[in-house]
Length: 381
Image (tube, rainbow, N blue to C red):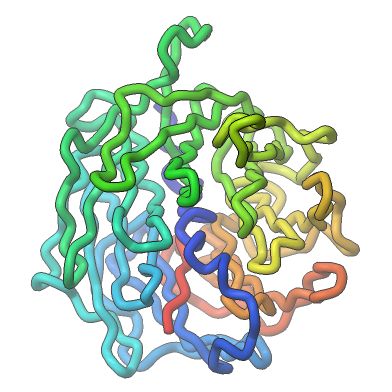
């Protein structure tokens, strides 16, 4: 199996709890931002100035951790969770400086799977979902689910990790699913899982009380070739999938009524939408107007305006936008003014301002140096 661990999705999904944030008045002019590194045993912390988009290193950064694929900060912005290359979840709290403080003496919680590459959490902070791309204890790619307790305590739910399986009687001769991305649709208690190897988005209903997943996914919806990440709009009605292998983006309408089929995924009329080379990460802005996709193989960002009626995509003016070498992850600030990209090959993070009228991107600050092979990005207080 090709270990495409750097193609994280966590995304979109990792920030789904930020999607309800809308007005700038709720946020201070500065915030903290944390970047995981794939090769360095560190997490880099920055203070982001949301007046001009500049980044300055938090005192004491980088913080000792482990090489990691993904980072997530909970909805209350009280704890950070790090998915390490060793197959563990490290937990941190924050001091008044914004420094990371290890929880439980830095002891990691095993996922039970191999190569955890993406993290997601429901908006209530009740469950933590982990996509394990590699073959682990369960003998296949898997999803670990943890119940989240006081002080970031993680308790595996019964049956975790859950082997990723296509729906029963699914017409695919030799399925070999590999989970690389996730999105939580909390209103419907659904987890959408990106299956890189088979090219599907798999639908998993989760028990809202226990977090338990069924033995098989309940729906498999074909995306493009080698899908790498997914992003959902704030309303939970649209899902977009970045397809690394076919250089495009698949768009789906999410069924929100019984007549539509609750949670069903219906391809948008004009889907798929052209991207540049190697789309690997995706994020919808908090206003739900724009989608941005990182194109790793062409060192660019594709920007799209989302049609408010149909969900179809049209390129923003100036798209695509150049970034650093090997971009791998995209994140949008909570106040919807700035976009940041981790450049895996360049060991930098680049910042862009978002034009609120048309979604056009403009470079706001020189890229800042971070640790070797930066990956996921998460925003704190």
